[in-house]
Length: 278
Image (cartoon, rainbow, N blue to C red; front, side):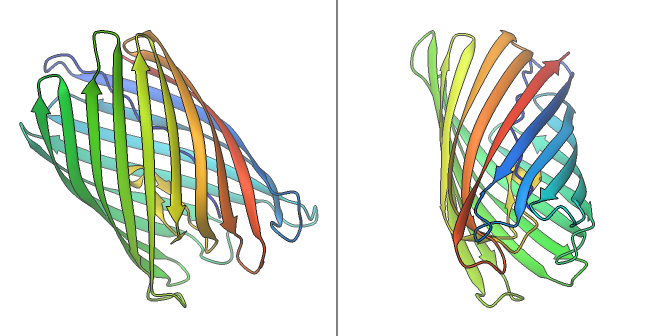
């Protein structure tokens, strides 16, 4: 069952003041119209992401509900609830983070599941520029007894171009060990570039390689399906009404091979979110 979601959480923190934020979001997903490429027709998803923290720590909670409809109207909808929690601790030049992602679903293939994750990262400041690096580790286990391990090293560079412009580049590699699948390992990558200008930002993103039953978005997005994810691309636009009030819209396309089907299909998802911090 595909869970395509997540928006990067934006938390604006001044000095060491504690900030609480809430980010409701919703989206609509459309699958390939060709029956040879996808048995699914569309999906609705909505949820909320909540954070609380300072420059020293960050607590994150996320709830997502997904409802997938099939082309065959006699088939029961696939429904799913996702609950995630993470805690991060931040120091002068390094950080660590841990959490879990719980999945409750009526999917008869994998069934419900649990994902535990930890990460360790470092960062360095050069003037107004910031460079971050580290590795995320995930362990996933499902009711069907399928289990897998994923390691995701990453590198991010933020550059302040001038007083009004800034840019952020992010690269992640995803290496999966999959003992329960015919292929015992998969390798994929994610890349994004964000351009900031005054009260707006624009993100271009894409991915490639091969991923199955993978984890993305630092543990808050789980693709709990045996479909083979191959390539994808997307765009996201955000507008800051204030530094802690942000509206964002995104559009993404995903190309994959659905389980039990031989032709590659595609899906598209439109998402909207509203971030408010206080």
